[in-house]
Each structure stands twice: as structure tokens, then as C-alpha cells.
Length: 532
Image 1 (cartoon, rainbow, N blue to C red):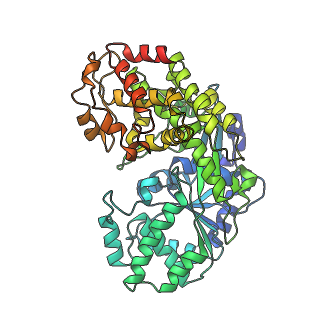
Image 2: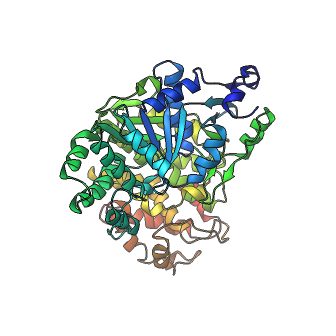
């Protein structure tokens, strides 16, 4: 069996292998989509293929939609050339169940693939045709949070964006410039409203997307490349709904590749592109998935709610995102990451067999987080965290490493721990916290770059890594007295933690735990045992 449309005609072989097939005619869907496109998506990677693509597949299977999605990539064109085109846009979607079993399905809902390459006249003409189509209802994105950035950390426009502004909308290179250029083309042609929807895993994603597009659009108006009415169109005719997405979609797993090959599927091997993208004709991902979108679609939309998507208001989207990021998932991940690195773990699922670490995250989530959680109303925080602790984190199929999750921790602790700290501080109860100060102390101990056996370890990349390690450089394992006042400048930094931990009364407790953690070989394990 091969992953192409011709091979799917032999349904018997696929069904014998236990692989579900599309319940609609892919060719007819592709023809209708080409004639009147409805949905274009930027960011052709794994979470799009395995999650967003499966949403549209459900609608097509139920007869609730008659068109597919056109995929586009702004970053890695090899994905289109080596994964989409050779396999006729098909994806083999593999759900990794907690019991070790898998469910497989061929997705045919993506019926076109484009490269957002301003130097390719044919591709650009197709983009313009799509954006000039009144039928287009939605343009969505999974390009990672970095894809929306048009300014450097110092607040200046990136050189590529400055060049796009100078050169005008005909040759845009940055993703946000490209979108701004296509919206200008839509304004100059049909002027039909449109929803532009970020589905990336970042806070206030719709706001980030809008601000970046408007930055470029305003500059083009000021330079005379676009009329002032273009900005009015963006403001009044284009919506930028907020969303919350949650689904772990790791790199293609060797075990999954071997299983698919054993079922008789040919040419299924992953590739690594020159831009270091790990991708395969198949996507492997956990089964749990959540997508919550602000219901603001001025030109209509597919019935996404019929495929498991939550459609709601902006405030509820924000509450759902806060629930996940500040309480039910991300804080647990960070605590497991820093302690897992120090205790010699390389897989999160293996950490979930460790009694002390499980007690740490349960205390962090259930005892400290849930009492002050932001309840979105549409998803139960308790049910969400139950699923995280009992199914998602222990899933042996999820090859997620604490070393990866520990990346950029200085940029995460403010939201992952800081919001709960603020809630307790407002009640005058910050001193009641145990798991959060243990997690923060564990992160600072991790920055010393030695594990619990006092062997050197690599600390994951972080923009503040050098600065923080310099402040901790004179602290010696086995000599708690060397701590002195060295933690205070870090703990006072509200830019890191969201508040001054010295002012709200947590600094003493964090310092105490930190001194325990550095008291000698095995102290990390003993500190967890003693305090949980």
C-alpha cells in the first residue's frame, strides 16, 4: 500500500490493516475547493495536519462541509515539496492511546499546498486568486509564537520587516507582511469580510496577530503603498478571533514508523529538512485535544462545533487559556522538567512512575492551583487536570523530554507560577504554598548545571541563562552558607516571576528549599521526600 489517492481505491487492504479511510470523494472535494476556496491555513506542520486537518475531515465525513483546506507554509518549503506533493496532500494520522494501542486514519481534508514564496510567480498568483475569492471565510495559522514577531527584543522592527515596508506589498518575505499584502489584495478586489485566526499556543494570540499585521499595514499606508481605507477594512471587515489550542504532537516516532511499515505501508519514513523540521507522511499525536475559538467570523464559517471545537466569546477563550497555562498543565510540565533533568530522566512518562515527582505535581495542581483556578465554564478544570495527570503525562507513546520542556523557563515561570502566587498573595496566604516554591527553588538549583549525583549536566537554552548562572556562580554544592543574599536579586525580579517574591513573603521559603537542595549528593531527592 502507498499513501496516494489511487491506492486508497483498494479499500479492502486498508481496512484489513485497521486503517480508517475518508468517507467522501477526495477528488470532488478538491475540485469544489479550487473553484470556491473556503479555508486557507498557514503553517503546514504536524499539529495542523493531525489536529486541524482531522477537524475538517470529521465535517466532510458527516456531510457538513463540501470543501477542504488549502495548506500554505511560510518557513520551510521542503515540507510542501517532500511531504505534501509526493503523497497528494494525504496524511496518515496516528493516535497514540495511553494503553499503548494506536488508531490510524488517512486524512484527505487538505486538498492543496502552497509555498508563501514571493519570488514564485505561480504560487503568488494562486494566493491572490484565493484571497480575491468572496467564498474565503477563514485564514488560520499554526506558525508558532515566533512567527508573529515583527520586532526585536529591544522593540525595533526586524530588518526583514523593515525591508518589506520599504519594498512594498509586492514582494513580502516575513509571514506578517505576506498576510498584510494578501489582505490588501482582498481589499483591492472583492472587499469581502474575513476571519484571520491564530491557532497557535500563545496567550492572546489573536491580538498578537492583529498587532503585527496592522504594524506593516500602517507603514504601507504612510508610504503611499496602500490607501487609508485599507486600514479601515482591516479594522471593520477583518476579525482576529482569539483561540486556545492544546494537543501534544511530538516528532515522528520510530516505533510508529515500524508499525506502519509492518502493516504494509510503503515509503513512510520521516525526513529532516534543511531547516531542521522533523516530519513524515504520518503524524503521531496523543488522543486528547482541545480547540476553543472566539466565535467571530464575519463571512461565515464551517460548523466547527460539530467536530468538537468550542465556539465561544473572547472572555471564555481567555479563561480557558489561563486555566491550562497557569494551573492544569503548563506548571506541572515545568516542575517535572527541572526536577527530571536533575534526577536523570529523559522522558516525562518515566517521571510519572516516580512517587515524589507525582506527589509534587499533584500538590501543585490539585492542592495549590485548583482552589484559585480561573474556571472557563465550558471545560471542567478538575476533569482537565485529571486527564493530564492520569492519561496524558504517563502516556508511554509520548516521547517528550524534560530537557526540551526546560527550554526558556525564565520566560515561562511568570505565567505558569506567577498568577497563582498573585492569587495567594492577594489573600495574604502566599506562605501556605509549598509545591510552587519547591518548583522555583528546583529551577534555580537546576541552573547550577549539576544533577543530584553531582555530575555535570547541560542546562537547556534560555535567554537569561548566562545572566542567572552568573548570579549563582559562587554558590557551592555542599555549602549552603555560600547562598548568602545571592538569590534575592533574582527573586525580586517581577519581570521574571510576575511579582516581587521578596515582597509577597515567598523568598524565605524558596531560599530555605534551595539550601536543602544544594546540601550535598542526593539532596534533591531528599528535599522532595522531606517536604511533600
